Image 1 (cartoon, rainbow, N blue to C red):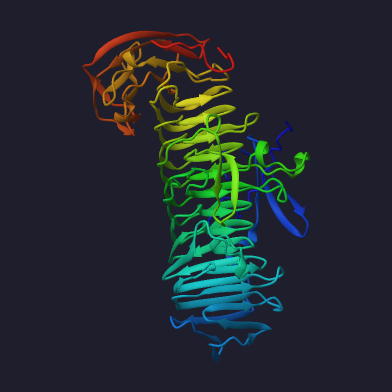
Image 2 (cartoon, one colour; image 1 turned 45 degrees about the vertical axis):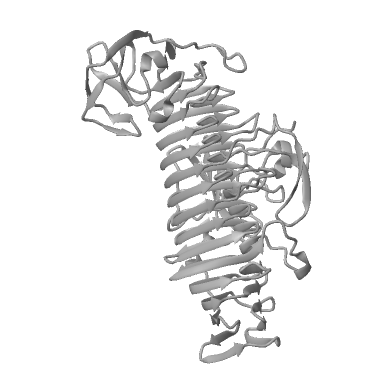
Length: 591
């Protein structure tokens, strides 16, 4: 197995809406050039880098061509440039300005700007009841699509297909909708159409504005870019009965706005192509990319398959032995509000058989059946330094699955992670927690609140992890913050409140066990309030005052009543202490 390259290129803006320093552990800034493009690079102690590209903001671009298009339900299209206007109602081409032509073939409206010499802004209004919009620019100039009250229902084409340009800027005003007429499992290539997205861009797709866009599709992807997607603003909803709500080749960046994503398809014959949320593929033609980077906004996702995934896998997707061309599939989140639900049944590829199934484009594929409806997956890593998360999944809520370097780092934020059939946090490397308020719940069988094949290291934060398994994954590692591991008989039943008091009787930890934790085995907990000395464990207490996040108290209450369950004496040496639970038996023999 080849070594994985840690270099990641997250193309984000060093301007309005994007911080110049992405987290408190940023160490050095340096500027370098890649071809003719200048970037600023922020080196992280976690060995990720951020490439910041200032041209992502549409306000930094000058558009020499300004064209207004009015779509008609009768499949006509009128256009105007300055005071000149005309109608494209026939199959003949008309020149609008700067060698830009328009052609209307029964509602299939083609705009050719390949011979233009300027950036072009297209302000679009109106309705196409059975048509689509195809735009061909050139790679030296940008295209802006200003949608203002647009409704398109397509036939055998995507609603909007930007085939070639330098960048595609999508600016949302008013209320807009795109409905894809294509269906899953049908080959549309005979019509010359291979675009996978209802809204498709071959170039980077950069979305802003204060309007709304609703996308409905049942073929492949709702919004797709063969480069990267960046969302600055707007309200976008995608109802997907195909493959993914939002998908890109090289990256996804979100600075603001609102996303409401629904992926509804659950294939009865196979689970491989269930509907997903935000997916980044990764490609060795774009070294270091394949990332997801979110600094703010509101995201609601309900899918049958994965909700958010930077999916490039060195074991499955690598085509060369050169590590310098590898993507780095990391999910990096510094802020935002997340409500994520996945619903389908887990199908473990290690235990399933090979099946032949029909893909979205009508072709067939033979592959091992699998379904992992995870919440947030970064094959190489998941890094969270802020945000509020309510993630309820059937498979792992957070997952970093690359066997050699996968890691989960949490330094801030409020996280509630509940997995019905998997682990709440699953890392094939380490889990490092240095801050935040974290509640993890994985009450089923052998599943864990904190599951790692490396070490679970606490250096900060307040956390409680509920596990269905009877073993503990809290390796001593480099934990400078004390960790308690309590059996369920010592912590109490689901719905009850437990507390830990110090030798003076002061409350240092309080937690109301979530009702979904029925039948759990152990709780792994950590707080900076635990130092050396003697601590008493109480279950079934009554708490008053204080404040809590999902039952985990961040401002400690006063407590009364309850049952004394035992005492733990903490020394200055060991980091992990157990009461009614074993510290041994984790995979790899770490204890």
